[in-house]
Amino acid sequence: MNLPKDLLYSEEHEWVKKEDDKVRIGITDFAQDELGDIVFVELPEVGDELEADEPFGSVESVKTVSELYAPLSGKVVEVNEELEDSPEFVNESPYEKAWMVVIEPSDDSEYDDLLSAEGYQEFVEED
Image (spheres, rainbow, N blue to C red):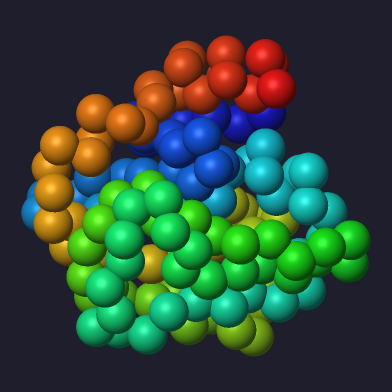
C-alpha cells in the first residue's frame, strides 16, 4: 500500500495535501484497491461548500458505488475535470492524476482529526 508521508488521511480513506492556504483531496491507494476498477466519478461544483465528514461526491466501481466524505470543511475552488473522461486515473494514480477537489478550508481545528501516514496504516490494519 502506497502511503505518502507528506499527506494527512481520514478514517473515510481520503487523503489531504496542504498547499499554502488550500487543500487538495483525493482517495487513498487502499480505498481504490478495495473498490476495484473505477468506472465513474461524481464530484461537486466549484463554489460548493463542503462540510467535514459529510458526502461530497461518489466513485462507482464495477463492484459498488461509494460516497466520498469531506475530510475538512471548506469551499471548493477547483475540481479535477479529467476524472469525468478518465475515471481509471483513480486506480492508476490515486495521489497524482486522480486528486478530486481543491478547497479553501474554513476550520483549521479540523486538521486535528486527520491521521498521519503511520496512523492511517495502523487504522487500516485494525479494520
